[in-house]
Length: 33
Image (tube, rainbow, N blue to C red; front, side, top):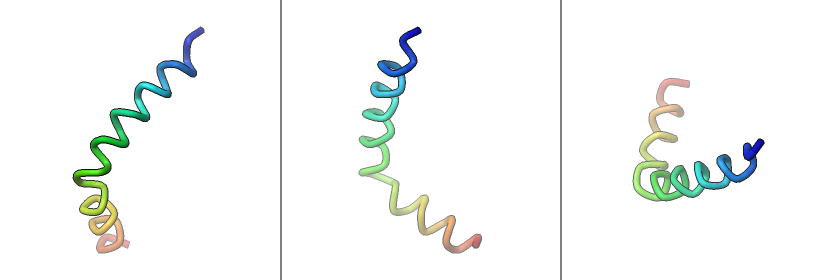
């Protein structure tokens, strides 16, 4: 199984997306909490 390599690739995509709208998502969670 290549789960580790898939997770690493997925994390890279998530990190790129998080750099753009990560703070917005966090602020939404804080508002809902």
